[in-house]
Image (tube, rainbow, N blue to C red; front, side, top):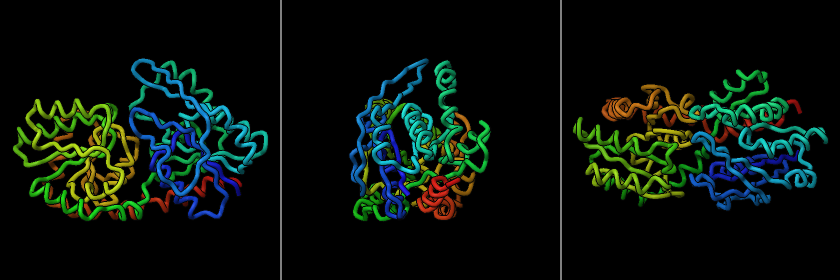
Length: 377
């Protein structure tokens, strides 16, 4: 069987999965890369080291901005001809954001009797519907309902597609996961010792991700201020990541006289497990999701607001962390404080690690992806 994966941009976690998939399967696999690597949120790492050689397609991506929301339109005009050349039996494609390219994929599959798998997060909970959606949704839905299988990244995405009227047997949750075995091997022991010495007896609140507005990293400085100044806690806040908000975050920490309690480590691509192992809690104050899985691989509990739906599958309140349903910083501070003061924190660490080992890992992701690819074959 020939399988093609199309991604508008190859982010690091996609590279990990594709490496794993290609290693495990006996199928002939093609990877098509839209080549976008200049996204402002630094999610794309196109060109990063991988065990496969992607076919980088010439592409362009106009961005529509309406009422404060951005809609990137990814388009690779020669994708159809690449499909004609390789003749894959199944095409696994990114979902809604890739609808322009999915028109080419649908045409190819319709003409030659092939199948395509819709791989997506579904609805982004923080994005509001407007006239742009009313114009584009009919095209997206036309393509969605013609997919042979929907590969949902989490349970919330599956619920979204079922509500749209997709048959339940066509929607399979493939847990959007890190390669847990690979992640555990990337702990830098010297760095770990250094971080633990730096931490001392303080509790560490960790943020891992791009420093962009949609992820709300600035809220954590407010949270730290509430906990340190009002509750007199001996906590630190560590940022691992870079982005356009970094300068403003550093300025705020100085204004609030929190310089000695907030540390910026920049982008870390290898050895990030050392930070998870050192931290007492990881907090997801805005959009995100994969970081929850990454944190729990190392047994670090998570406090999260509504993220990408992954939190609903991974965070069990009081056992592996807490979910805060609103954007009130006082409530977020209370949840973080409650976790850090809990006598059951060591038990939570063990529960978090077990949960991902048993229910949310690369092995299950691979198995569910195969189920989707072979669905109705």
